[in-house]
Length: 251
Image 1 (tube, rainbow, N blue to C red):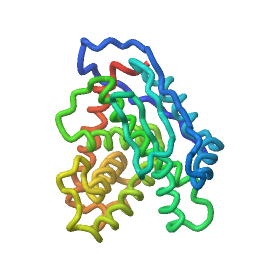
Image 2 (cartoon, helix red, strand yellow):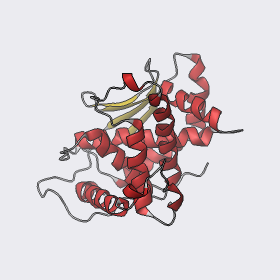
Image 3 (spheres, helix red, strand yellow):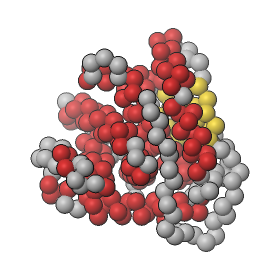
């Protein structure tokens, strides 16, 4: 697999003149040996590809962090990924990576390890977004889950890693199919948008970044034309917003 460079978002302006730009830490990556031996294949793939090792190195060379942020791949007992603000750690659960493997095994013939890594890439940047909101004390006035979805999407689009955006869309699209079967049990009160809403939001940002390149996104089932019309403006707003918020933290 080719690991594309993580180019930084070009800063437009500082949102706060009071922020001190001191580099006091790094992202620190750990792969915990799985307690469940069924995750050994995932564990080995993650280490052999070194995808996240390279990604973390590039992020550390791009951003100033106020303290170390641990990135831990580990058994969690559930399909999940999350940021813990008390320990300042991002947890990437083997159970969730295994879920991606199971999903793409059904969708693809042959080797699907790239798709699994790419789906994990989107999830990792989503959780890193939570860490940045916390550690940089970024002003967020809407639902944070939607905000960090946009962070992951914009960063990937800006760095030419569209395949990870597509993998993120695919995982939420599959989740949406499962939600359709359990409509009466969906937590409409939850902090996350419904999976189908996340599909539309991410697809809109991708389309807005390049309407010609993503023209095939526009259809009644995937990205309705009524939504697509405003997507270039949505993309520019999200891109400019993140550039402004992160301007103080670019090395």
